[in-house]
Length: 216
Image (tube, rainbow, N blue to C red):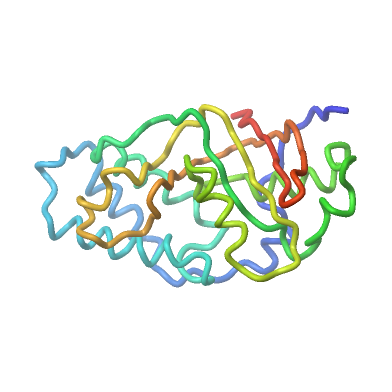
């Protein structure tokens, strides 16, 4: 059975446990206006260092409940687009992956409902919330699987997969511009999934594969 509806954003039960911002989000617009329309030769090393420092605090520390929270994370997208333009990053990749664990409000939803998970609206909403928004993905399946296994937990592991997504920010070439103030992993791409639709759910004995498409 397929469902015909608009996907929801981040699940409200996840937002209930969202952390407070630990960086000044007003800085985002200042950075965007500084970068807008500029070319590489018009941006100083000092400015790149300052931007790198801010984005490391805002983006890299998210997994530690620091930086920009879920409610405000999409505000970084304009800055990411400008950085990708300046650093001549890829605008699209053939395939991208995102390895995650299910949220704590229903940590074993896939185990409980599989193989009928694709027909369970609550499970679909859970998955859509994890895929939605400005998030870290990778063009490396191995890397993405590692992201889903880096913590000891009994939550279901899953690997999102999407074909030909538009890239907001590509980690390639970026480090040399931000003066070693890395806030992205090698092979990481930031995607902005605005309306995820779950196409297929399968299980390989180790983790769940979830194929999605962004309906825009």
